[in-house]
Image (cartoon, rainbow, N blue to C red; front, side):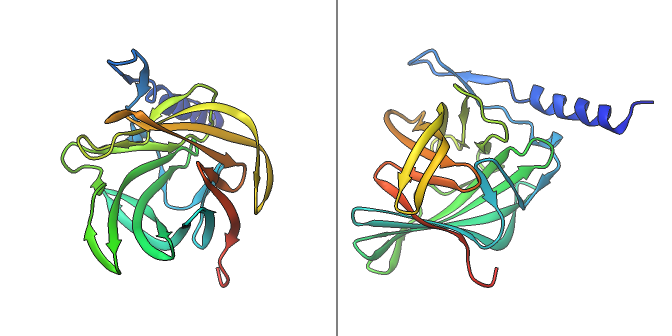
Length: 234
């Protein structure tokens, strides 16, 4: 009879083995991981890995130029493609006016701590009114599938799809450094993850994001972290 420890190792190995398939970019010849067998995971709506805090009440505030962004883990869940996910709200203001509100849906693999992205609902605003919903997608609808938002065990040169929504959102990421120092108004953070993000729909558009251990996103192009932590009462 196998011990529980050995059974656990086999289960984890099976999950990791399911994350090896990839799609080749015809323009560059690069292979990007785009197959994630989340059915092998015990998916949970709360937890954390090294670079993601998926706990209700946790909030990041980033600012730069005339833009301010609040990223808040809400005390809400939503079923997407048969999976219960955590709702993470992202609010963006430009010149003091609300510009965008996105409700993102994440779930964490209990075994590997991988955070998977199951879609989002997006509202764009003009003068206080919703004018469009560009970028909205849900896993299980029109061929869309869950992507990998943040691996539980990041490795240098990992390349993976974050969003798999054909014709809507095909964002992908490459880990280019794991030992960056990030200076922000909220503090200086060591051993930050540097991720190059882009889209298969527009390979010329690239941006760099930095994630600090135990916090998450601390820099997104011109945006810098100004505060972080749990909201009062949470």
